[in-house]
Image 1 (cartoon, rainbow, N blue to C red):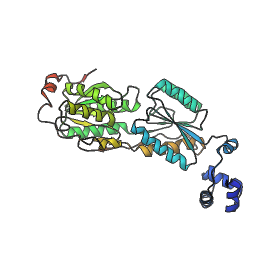
Image 2: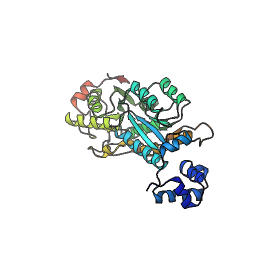
Image 3: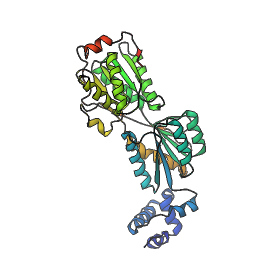
Image 4: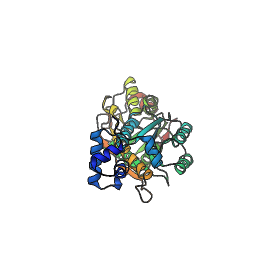
Length: 349
């Protein structure tokens, strides 16, 4: 038998309107009453009628989540955090993958805004102008991207990049290469800037920028040969997928990690402990990010915040594993030594 809101009201001894508020807008109900109503509804097996609720509240009971690539485990973890928090709040989640395409991203987000109460836009690849236009038209929270005037939740990308550099320098590395991510990635820009500034503030550190690569395993295999040719003793990869590709290609070239060359990543996705050597990486608490993004969006949708929501930056942490070691006494290989450039800063393309 279908349990109605009237049945829950009768069982709890409160009015139908109180039950409705306790389930849809719990912040408007005293804690004791709210807990009593919610527990009774759960025990009775009550399930809200989203269509009926939408007619009353003008809301759909759904939110949208847009990510660049669902195959990337970084975004999969954020999805888990979003879904868990949304489910607890009684919201459904529509998830869309834009395949790293900025034009498709704009089309997808605009289509979703007509079907949901708000959108969480994760690591958007679109221009500032395109993202700002969407934010003006609908409730929008940015994840892993900062943009003036738009509420956002970011990781401390710069802090993570500096932690990686301090770790490598402590191991004796002075010639460090960066295998960058997509040129449209805001987090890549933040990491690149922090790496540059660190090198510029250190008289004896050389940062070699290898170029931009796809943020996947094959991107790392493409970057590996360039890294070897640069003469670097350590490579900072845009993410763990790129780092894994680097390690694999270096192994096929007969280069030992970390005895000959060190490799680091970002994200601390599960595969970072499955490759050998296990990756030194920067841990981003992605599930926490997903949960926080839902809270921020619902604050806007439900009018729970009185003023503009402050942008939130989540701290990160360096995780040291086996893929980094002390700088080798000599060059990693004769080929690496012969091809190493002599300039203070170089860019390979």
